[in-house]
Structures are given as structure tokens and as C-alpha cells.
Image (cartoon, rainbow, N blue to C red; front, top):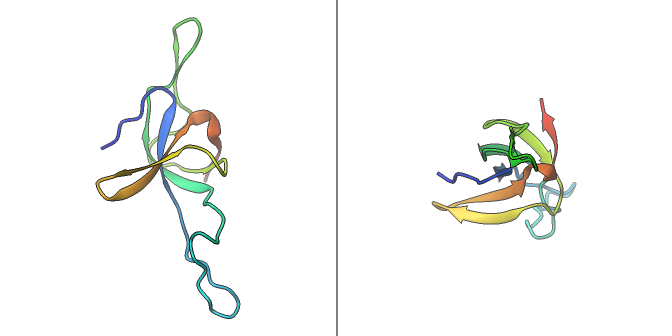
Length: 94
């Protein structure tokens, strides 16, 4: 599995198939990028100027809201993931 470094977080973006009122399925390139995802892996945390580690605020399994254009898409074992910095996460969804 992917193990993120530092304050990075690996997400699996949640996508939904969207239909119009007329029943037409919208292509994925027409829809806006997803902004919610499930945390798959979390790095060790950010290193502060004094050398201490600041633990991440999220954990594996959390559902999160993230910035629209955050992170880098990667493919691993046929699955697509998004690697973002913790600062790009907006909220944890309960």
C-alpha cells in the first residue's frame, strides 16, 4: 500500500454517477471534481521549526472534505488515489 510522507494524506475520492432530470448520464469530464473522499493512509505529520512532529488531525477511514483542485492523482494497483497535503483538507465528515 502507499505510505505518504510528512503531512500528506492518501484519499480515495468519492464519485457519484449523476443523471439529469431527463435521465441522461453526465460524462465524468462534464461534472465538477469530487470534493469528498475517504482517508486511505496518513503520513507521520508535519515537522515544526523546533523539530517536533505535529500529529495529523485525520486517521485512516475518516471521510473528509477537501479543496476542489488539491493534490495529485496517482494510480496504484489499478486504483486511482489522490495525495494531498493535510492543509488542503477542509473538514472531517461525521
